Length: 368
Image (tube, rainbow, N blue to C red; front, top):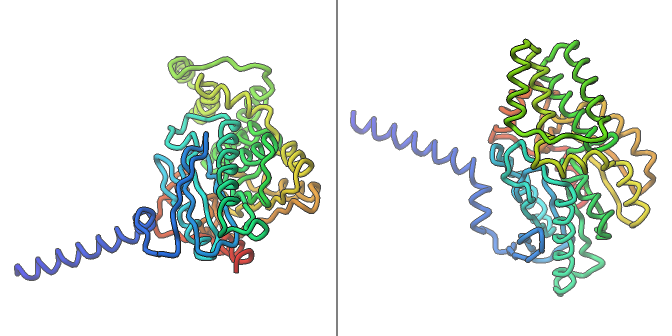
């Protein structure tokens, strides 16, 4: 009997250990190198802090990763662990591509904090300059054969274009993933908010009211600062008047943009235009822009992606657009359209997800 219990405990312990290793192996591997072919180099990069360069024996190219909002160098937030940055770095390293990563200024901040895109653009500038200087100082790199590509994801897309436009850095190529824009950055956030409400199943009459209120708010010339305490007082009055709960939730989401700590972001987002940035970058530089949207991106409405596909044709030959089939926002494989936000969050926390074959094919085509 005792042996049976002992064997059962050993079996359960082994199973838990196996799951733990599977779950956290990439994270552990980031601290302990099991491959002598790759060397980790730390570079001082001004406002980007210390960037981490994973160097290969015979590098064919260099990539600088720019993650989504509030994500660290591994593409993790305080409430979500994707480790896409780590996985992608390993995939590229296996193909003799060096990868550099850094922590965004908003990494680790709570969900109601937004950092001015200009601040992130300054980080990208300093990270790129440091990486470029290191490349030019090392014999292992041949300038013509070791171009630098910036791979940006989500919120990092617009910040990358801003860095190239405002500071004159010139990567050979910019690869944009998990993003789509229409009008200004603030207008695009409005589409993301209404898309989330649509997935939640909010009543159409309420959605009509939401869209009208958003348009009216968007057209305001100035915005008053609104603290959390002030919002709670407004919310109390709405609940007393029995305002629809979905409408209250929308107004709360919108109010976050008016928090004192988000003022710089709000003012910048109201005037920052994706189309203007793309046209300016293509005019000022020789950079090539490859834009990839995800078919089942849970953050972006399908019609926004379709509009981006149509507009891409107007940017000329140095701008291409493609949709990654069966791919979600974080570049994982997904075989069905986005569901409710709750289901999407559960899917994001699934440790057994695999990167999308369509996304991996993009890498394979460029670095066979």
